[in-house]
Length: 605
Image 1: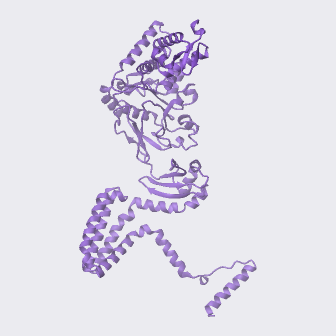
Image 2: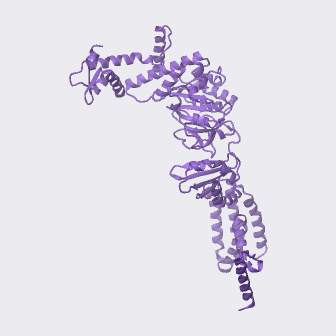
Image 3: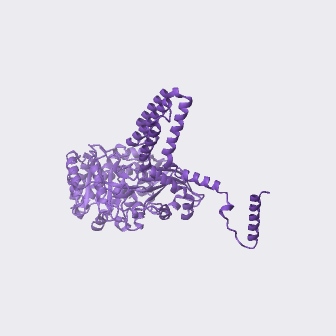
């Protein structure tokens, strides 16, 4: 046995003896094989800084390729020239397909390719070490490496990779042990990762860990967004916003629609995509504290709707017109007092009833807006104040919310806090299909505006930190994504109103006739308080009389539903509803399937 091996054997034996008596031996440098550790350490450093060393690695590859070409393939220099031209042109023209979206990035890639190709051509023909080719390669590589080292997206990608390499420890620390990162994408504002959750974990669990994730990842407060992946319940998209894309106001680009049937453009999401939502046959609710940007959102909505020649807009602003008066030239009616608001809503219900009667008589299901038959949109600013100062308004708004969809009568309300007291006891809030929540002060207000359980599902409107930022809940937008509405200032409102005022439509003949019948009825009743169903009384009464007559004249085997529809001129649902009402009072009976007749109580009322 050699002296070196004997010495190592003796040290191991002494170490065993020390452990036997509870003493932990300390390893010395002589005990270790240093060379493999040094090699592993260098390899780890090279791998860690592989992005920074990439220009040097490419330069070394170009030098090696030049040596190979000169030694074995010197006659290939024309092929190198043609290949270089083709590759440089492809990068300059189609570089966006290889993750080079900006022209300056494509130009840099094309120039670098041309430099390497030119040097290889000369190296193949003259030799890679012929002066001044080595110096040109060295200096050129260093000069071209500077943009690479300084590129923001490359540095961000490296930082993200190093951060996410520690994800197992981060997940363990925040309570998401078992989750892992599947992919990562760096964009202009930060980065996005696809997160695969651990067994039994849900997206809600990850959402609840957002403050802990912000601390573990070292981001600013409110920088993390987590959204579910609809296809898989154990996946989530985690987005880190390093630079707020909504830090500055976004100027309004002008109207985006020419018809109320088209989706309105309200603003931009954080990824730059448009916030588009149709308002036809959908009621809307804008909520948020004072100064959060509700008025700005309403202005953007009016900027688009006033450009539609197939939509009439009525407004209610009990702040004496402070918010809606600048749009007065584009509003067909504007109520600024409780009495005027009550009359406006009563007329809106009259139009709704008149249109409903017309649709019934024509056998149609919905009112199709056009310049000759425009949709009616009623915009109410500070809805809670309307309900408080105009007690009769609640039944009108409730009727519009319940029945306004088919006749194209839409209600859009803006309020600070849509509590049950503020929204009344009717169905107004439950019928609001489109909900925009600007910043709220209390977390519970999120559920008041967006719906029960939305706060727990990740709709954190209380974290919005600037006027104009909002969350939108609609059939097309069912995940919490932050957005910011456009800025349409007072001068812009004035210019837009002046431009759109000359092309505003007039009320259609059916609606005008309904209003005239409403006025005549009020006059005949001595200006009594109107009923929200007054415009339908005449037509409905005639149909009910025809139904009663047909049932009384029915034979013993009864009369069919089709015959009753023909006799009354009403739809099947109306006939069934009346038959059920009469059946509950024992005035009619069902003889057979789909056949009815009157009972003696109907013949002798």
